[in-house]
Length: 477
Image (cartoon, rainbow, N blue to C red; front, top):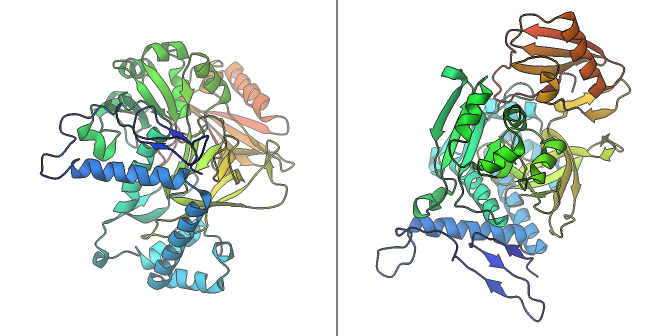
């Protein structure tokens, strides 16, 4: 039976009948097509770009919400296709696949970052000019250590856009609203802030729909009052933002002011959203929807719109496994190491790739979604505090906690030994003894006993090449 999928935007409404049979209703009445959406050629309906977009969106929705048996059969076929390709093109993969002796996916060895580096260095991309598929190179941000270089095809980039578009329709979001994206810049920006117009969030459908506009606000140690003024200059709509930047903005405006500035939904990325901040926005009618992704494979899972903290796996893109030692837990919740098989990774294969995250994997979601679901996601083990007794715990110190002690431009906390935490206070040449003691006491309150805490003022934190600004980094994990 096809599960219900409702889209208030009007693209798709698939309803499950209570009587005999299954009724399906497709309704586009609420899609704000402009006059150029339909074809001006004889015996044609939509323009080719619109047809391509709608067809692919329908395929993705059908795949991820349709019967489980059909979805799993498709995944097995795609995995077999990828393995045949890798075995044919790569000595590295030929050896690994041969060693599995036909035991299937679980029989393959775990792929670690060092393995990927070796394969890319020795063999390059596994797609060539004769394949007539554009291939590009990319490096991760390096937030979990040294950046990882790999190759990806044009198909990967196209999928990433389309799968994000599909989620808008799956969640029934209003596509006429604006979208504002706040991003950390890799390089210095005059004044610490730049505002640019982005392309339509609707991909191929963008030129044919009277939808919302996109703004990209890039920041680099900005004046938060100026950032807030720029953000509210137009109705915000959907706000794509790292939680650390959101916390800094909350020093300028409370959630109710965000709501009055046109905020419809928070779409946090890069870091987990603090539960208290989620609650504060929910209290004024603004919901948050997180997603789980990585640069190597793109979308991994999207947060359920009914069960907070549960993420439906993007089964059209990845197969997810969790493995690890018995009894492994974070904050008391059982978790395992996340392994990803990227079904479209033909340029640089990612098969049973250990991403470095921990999570719980279930067969289905409490909401009724009949598909693999992740919860208790710990995005990078390097964001966990390891106690001397071996316990792993999340640690999250808010920007407002730091600002309550003293004026800071930026901060970072590093665990450098089993019993040592180093607190870097950016933008300060010195700290008073009282400020130093207050920072140490505040961090100790969050971390617990058993740690020596060193507080260091620095003119500028050495973030390296990473565009992420993680408030906590464990150098032991």
